[in-house]
Image 1 (cartoon, rainbow, N blue to C red):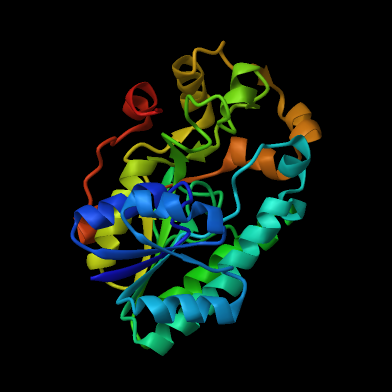
Image 2: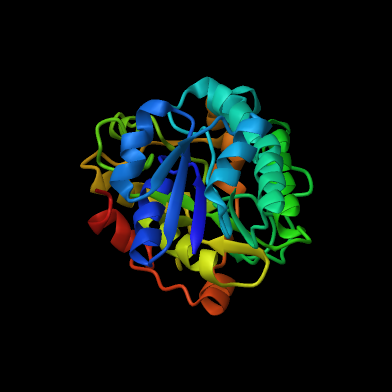
Length: 320
């Protein structure tokens, strides 16, 4: 099939495009930066340059590709973490741009897909920690989201919901929204690379366990996430899917294991009041009250199999 990947040079795109090519698909990769065209070619795709926030440019790029499937992997979440971003994520440049990509760019891609007769759309959403803070550690796609998220996360959650609703309700094709867990592995924020966003604060013991550390996170190795996406390009009913590993776990369990994998000292422990003072209410809630996600639907309906079923194995063997 002809597949159009928006965000082909992003963290997931770099893993996804070669997998799609290996599965026999003809891939066109969109990038905003002309200098990245050679990188797109090296992945096995034909490059096209367009600003995802320019509707005319997106329409022209999609029309030139005439895809059967559009894959939306656009975010702006690379770059260093800061205490300010943790305290007020809705005000960070990365979050603001990513929200625009999840709303405006989604509209542009859907309009372009409809115009060329695409029959399927697969889009990136988020599922590492976003559910209502009740119930068990692993919630399904049918379980409710937090009805009253921290003020700092309301705009962010609105962006996820907009994308999921827009994609899964298209009438001219099949729309799938994939709620990825927290990525780890080569090129991600959790890797052994010197510039990995989370590696430096963990090595410097600036990423503590707050309170009891009971906030449950769902991780997924980036190669496994790309594999699920490649399958979703080919099959699966419209709807939302959690793309996470088999092992949702509280912060107090996975953070020390990650520190060991990064050859760092064990993380410090700080009381909840101090965590709230340093990082803000939103980050504190994530680390103490969040719930993880279940991948049963994705494994059942997509036939997805994970190379790294647990972060326990993945942190030891797959950080890159």
